[in-house]
Image (tube, rainbow, N blue to C red; front, side, top):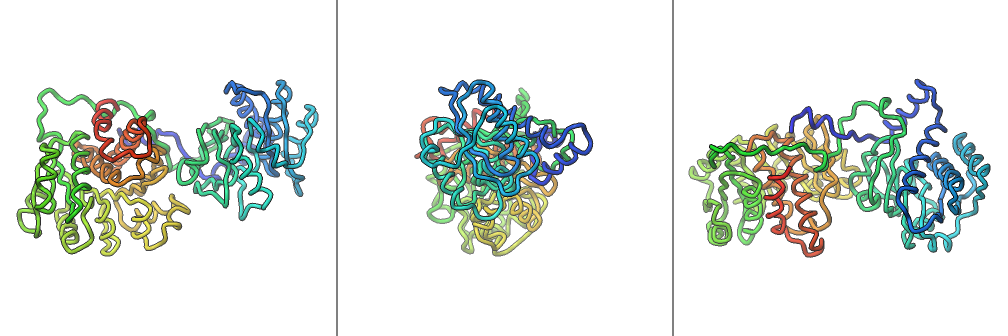
Length: 493
């Protein structure tokens, strides 16, 4: 997977970039803003027609901005196609020209709007959400909160136009409440916030509608990556290959009582194709690690001595952090890894130590979850989640290397390009799953992929393995359940 290939992935944009593209399109071509409204509405109309819903009766909720114009125009098209349409809206104080034109088109089609009615909302079978779109600002009114809650409490199938109402499209965070859509049809370009944070819950199926903005959008440093975007990455191994050519990984961690974390990370490295994996851990853990996975090598460490440095020097890549602890034992091992000057993956407690004793490196991959990221930046978890894109940039600036900010819609950033990977499922919210990811990254680095490539591939493999494991159910899924699927995916992707 080359850098050239990564740059060819689907670009993702901020709201400001999309708005500027709309302005440029109007300025430099023969279209106006209402033409863009019509194109968006046509895409929504075609989407509804194609779904083969059980009913052709729809409730449309229209707001005061251009998202409301999209809703009115969609309603007009549906009426002309024979749908039974109920449109609810409140009077706009300062309607835009596009909204006025859309209302006129709607009325000419025979449509009539009515005030918001909570009872009708809760009884609807199909709802089109055109309340807020990208224009959400400040606190929502009590009326909007009531309407959104009514939609979410209904049994309706819900289509959100452009953005689920209540979601901040640059960050993915919800205001007080947000529409829980079954599908979000976003117009012109994927808005960055729709792929991460709380938006992963509220968007449902995310679909992009082309309305003719592509040639007016700037080059974006942000790309979307899922497994279907990948070419055939893993080539068949040479017939004369041997274990020494398949990458050597040393996994360091597992303070007293925490053998499981280092055990999971090291097996994940093996399952991802590393030829040789050594574990450096407390001597007491040798029996449980080597008995349950005899393919692993083991070195018991009570003190960081020359033998430990030899084991670090043997490896192509080091993975440190799973179960490491933050006491002197773990700190001394982290210092040894720093002195070894090897490509490495820093995870879990090694990140917590790094937050206390900051270092920088170009050759490492850091894999924080939001809590670890908050400690690394000395902020609250809420501040990390409030703007994950800003957080990953700050982390990379402060610590260098490649940052993998885990969570719903993982972000991978190397200081130049940012990849957002909306992969995986809530089954990953269990102990050990992050250790598995660090092991996969280390194995891919050891097999010759550069740090950014290895991180991107590992995140997708980890997420897809979780989806395969979750066929038995997300609740109760274990980190070790991913292992056979990791093995499967590195032979398929």
